[in-house]
Image 1: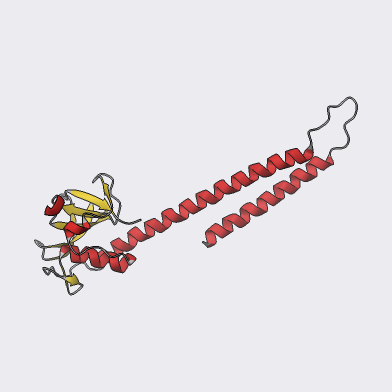
Image 2: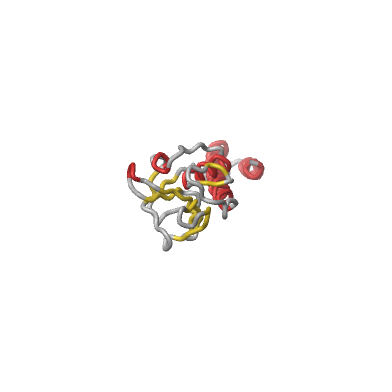
Length: 193
């Protein structure tokens, strides 16, 4: 927010300096001589210039707000991945929902609740009903990965980036990192907004 205020302050100072310079230039011209064409009304020129500055300031503000939202979204994604990675090695426990032992959906539920305050449903199949479907070629950190289809969804993990994900693995017996080469998901959902 301080960055946004700083941008507005700089733009406002620049705009005022430009308006002042335009006004000085407009009034510095003397009366037109008989052989010269009269200048356009300086107030019309000043009004046009002020409109252009307002439009520029609005564009800068919009860009700054979009950049701030993109950075906040990236921060939320990284928070989820960091929380997931902090549980590497926690044992797999069927029905587990705490760091003393997780199953796959208990793990994802814990991570999202503690990283973002976001409550996910308890089972992988219920979690699969959330969010927006995303291609496995367009994953971003924090996306949920699922194995199975429809009510037959049987596993869930969290994409960590660089082709890796974190999940509570029955086969590995713990929360671990894995790659698609190890165990490839069926589909993915984006639930971080």
